[in-house]
Image (cartoon, rainbow, N blue to C red; front, side, top):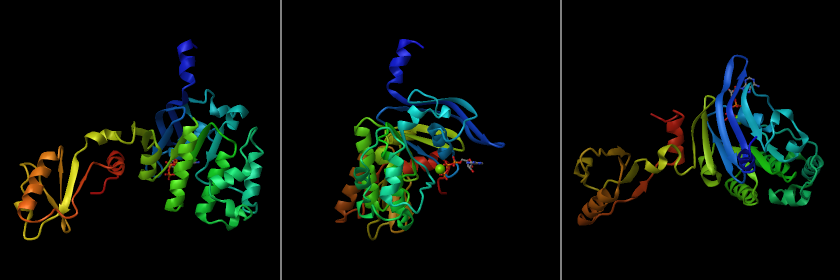
Length: 312
Ligand SMILES: Nc1ncnc2c1ncn2[C@@H]1O[C@H](COP(=O)(O)OP(=O)(O)OP(=O)(O)O)[C@@H](O)[C@H]1O
Ligand SMILES: [Mg+2]
């Protein structure tokens, strides 16, 4: 191993090349490449069954791979090395905590598995469960149980955190709090790999979004530019002024407006000039363009196009 490779190793938290996994004859992962730098958040997106949990659990050392190379903090997770495990915190998609323990007991028990855990009280506070510290796990609501899962992942003071759909069932304010927790972890130089079906979560947290479909990476990049999003067409939408029809709109040739209820919508590469003409036209008539919205493709638009889940 050359010196340049050693230098790179200190910056790269996770490196995956050609990862494959089959269940019987079913190919769940068909050659996945991933790279995550230290201090970054990687969000894995993809339809149900795409292979996200399979990939994450291989990185965690919970499942064996069939092929490819995997390096996690410089080690192969398949060896289930104690040092590596002590540096990782995990929220599994399906969590199994003893339902008869109290919240404080569950966190204390988990803390005991790590060489240098955080304070149990501090972790319970961090995930907003202080009022429930003495409640049995089985009495928690779904969202509260998920908060506990997050706390359990953090109590070992991990360098690398895997969160498989961590905020499913969270109410909107709990989700924002969890995002702040994740941002805080990264600000401290920790690395986070998460899966989510919430596009706003990926947009808010991820440095890199990797979209997996049918066991393959179909796109990877920063959420703002993924899949050419920054070059995508702009959608212009407004309420058709009274007494006008689609044919009256002063639009350039080739731009075809569509009616969507009382709204009209069209797509254009560069909207500045057409907006100037349109707004002048409306003002001359003594009208406004009610509900005017000018938007670029959202992360969800790009995701749906990439995964072929676009609605007709
Ligand atoms: N233990 C297993 N045995 C057989 N097939 C499995 C096993 N685990 C997963 N699979 C299959 O592998 C594929 C990928 O599953 P995986 O759980 O990785 O998907 P996912 O992307 O996490 O989906 P979701 O968004 O629903 O959580 C699915 O078709 C699933 O049925
Ligand atoms: Mg999953």
